[in-house]
Length: 121
Length: 135
Image (cartoon, rainbow over all chains, first blue to last red; front, side, top):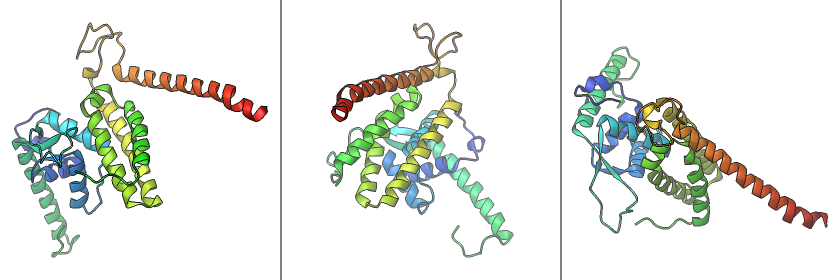
């Protein structure tokens, strides 16, 4: 994946990449923290395995969507073997653009009565 | 700090198996994320074991198998010239004709190691275990 200034060039994101960016949008997390947050955000519908997670992170690091973070939690809670990741400015722009694209798709589905008007999703 | 698992030996055994499985991945990926893969896997295993339930355990094993195969497929198809290099160190990061691919070499080494281990196991069974039953 090449670095890009225009977020639209990276769209559409895969569900895994989108949810990883959403999970990181609230702060730095390590791999397992991302896995748990994604499972929670999707109601268990998307369970990332370790290979899928780190495969995505590798591509996202290369594309500049995420960065490795120097932040460490309290030493008593920390495992020094873990690395923490944070969303980059480019990543934040890309996830916003993808969320907007998905919202438009949902609005179109709702307009065609494929979704009830009061449904959250 | 996390509480210790209620099944530390089982978790350790699963991690050892997973540690072998990740040798399937290209060496560059393994070098970058191998340790984290193992740590994350261990935490997940401990959670699954502590939650208990054979059904959850089987679902987890199936999930990891699928995850490994799909990751392997993705990594191998997206692998580019960066992973090719001359064994003599004459080329790095470029396609060098006639060179051996590191990922292929890793696979060959893995199968060769498995072959040697199986050969030792076979001889051990033939020389030590079998005579006890025959005699």
